[in-house]
Each structure stands twice: as C-alpha cells, then as structure tokens.
Length: 284
Image (tube, helix red, strand yellow):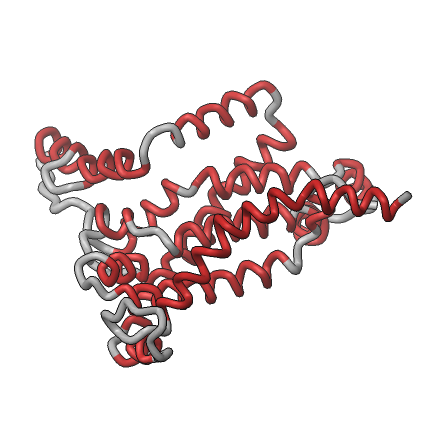
C-alpha cells in the first residue's frame, strides 16, 4: 500500500517537477554555458574558456561581492534583533493585534520597492523632508544622510523586514509554552530559558527568515543605486552593467554564476540544519 501511495505521489508531482525544471534549472544551464564562453562571443559551439572567472579576481569584482555579502549580513543581523521581540509578541502575547500588524506589514508589499525607496530619498536628501524641517524650524543645516553604506543597510532592513518577521513568528509559535513553564518552575532564569529553549526550538524559523533575508539582500540592487548613489558597487550592479552597458554576456553570466554558487552553497548548508518536517507539521 505504501509503495502504491508513493508511486501515485511521484506521478502527481511529475508535471510540476518538469515545470520547475523548465522554469528554474534550464535558465541556470544557459547562464552556466554562457559563463564559459570567451568575452563578447555569442557562439555556444565555441571552445570553453574560463577567462571570465579569472577576470573576477584580476579586475577586482570580488570587492563588489564582498560589499554585497557584507551588507546583506549586516542587514540580516539587524533585522533579527529588530524583528525577534515583535515576532515573540505576535506569537505569544498579542491576540487580535497580531492580525492588524500582519495586515499593516503585508500592505507595504503592495507598493513597489522603488517607489518606497524614492520616498526615503526625498526624506533623507539634502533639502528634503528632515533636513528642510531642521533648517526651517531649528536653524540646523545638515547635508542629509544619503550616499553611504549605513543608509544602504537601512534600505535593506526596511525593504526586507517582512521576510524576517513572518518566519520568526512561525518559528516562535512552534515553541511549546508548557516547556517554558516547566523550565521556569524548575528554577531556570529567563536568560537560560531564552538560550536553551526559545532559541533552539525556534531555530527553524530563525534560519528560514535569516536565509530569505540574506539571499534577497545579497542580490539587491535598488538600495545601493537609489540610497547609496553608487557609493559602493555591489555584485548585482556589476552583473547588470556587464549584460547591458558592457554587452559582455559571458562576463555577466560568470559573475552571476559566482553569486549563485556562493549564495546557493550557504542556502543548502543552512537548510541541511533545519527540521523541514517540523516546519511542515510532519514531525513523527
């Protein structure tokens, strides 16, 4: 009986699996093929060349990768610190207000990311909302807060806030309140309960939220362009420039493959340490 159900499950998943391969795997194969072509050569039958990967190291593209990964890591840590208390309150304390907060956060996703970032540009620019108000009413003249690394990280935190919050809520809700009460009755301090019960049992949500945030932030481009003003060049900027202005598809493909491989490796490593069955409610 189990074999029949397993076979039926595989057959049911076959159409979707084929579709996923066509949508996700096939484009990656195309990008991988282009990445080993000589620069500015569009003949797929040409002899493979790893010159584009050598260019990544010799022409300093690794700096852009470092900026992208570094700012993504800073945004992920900042979001965890900000979101954990709110997620805990939504999962354990708030009742009716949880739905209100959820709707308020989700509604922000209905507005384009670029539009929201342009709003912050008008707010933080010299002569903008904040600096104009301070100059008019407080006599303080400031240059604004745009075009630096901290404001780029702020943009990443602002845009990807929901992607950290909701997985954390799910992870924290998986922590049984009876276990926390039992630990408290046995004399465990709040700090010990947090580090030995709350964090380990909520780790699936923490890992998924951190992974979502890091992956999206590492490939983000609008924040560095609009808020950073090219103060630093991230990897996504280099990939876009190679494909568009440079018309060097092979270099752009190689840079994209490097970013995909690094982020993919981190994702697989993180997911291998997560109890996915527990998240999906299949824990035996």
